[in-house]
Length: 299
Image (cartoon, rainbow, N blue to C red; front, side):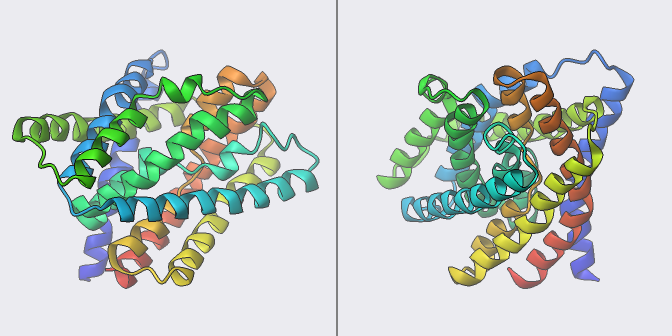
């Protein structure tokens, strides 16, 4: 009973907040989430990175290990994605991002926070930082079929990551005023990005259901399998194992749709939007199992 109670405590805040956004998006279809996206990218995520890295026992070694895990995870899914898209005779470049880049930010970080506390958030944030780097490098490269470092150079969370790692490496204590400020901004951003995910889901339509179902099932079924394989292969335990398993099980990232909308043809961005919507819907069911296993075996 305690385990089921904990499961409810972890999942309910996340699903409920997404539900608020979905309800608000249906009530006000003209609601623009651009402010939330800008705020989260320029202030929210940098604040979360700094706060979670400097107020926990996260080490540079742990960050580098998870950077390696996430890089390997993306590489494995890239192989799976290319094979799948070749079999289906689809665009293996522009349709690859939603298959290889999970929603570790909007959904993964809050779930890891509620499941494992501040340390869970810190490790989840490390994973998200790497995924974000892939979004603004590989993601844009695949969507536009052109390589540019400009989006990565303009990505404020990357600079926050370097500053945070500097504090961690040299064991510099964070000033209390900075800790309080980043706590306030970071935790408010978690609520806003969850709500904006709900708003986005209320506006996205699913096209080519059968094709989208294949992409979505690849993400929410194979994701946990790969995540569990990582836990066993790298002999992870406790918080590290739980965070790896949860983050690997996330649906397709909304950011892949936003980038696709900018850099890819309308038909491609519609397909990506469909995958994001359906994989997120399916994850409401698969994540119940994923979080249950995480709480039961990785504590």
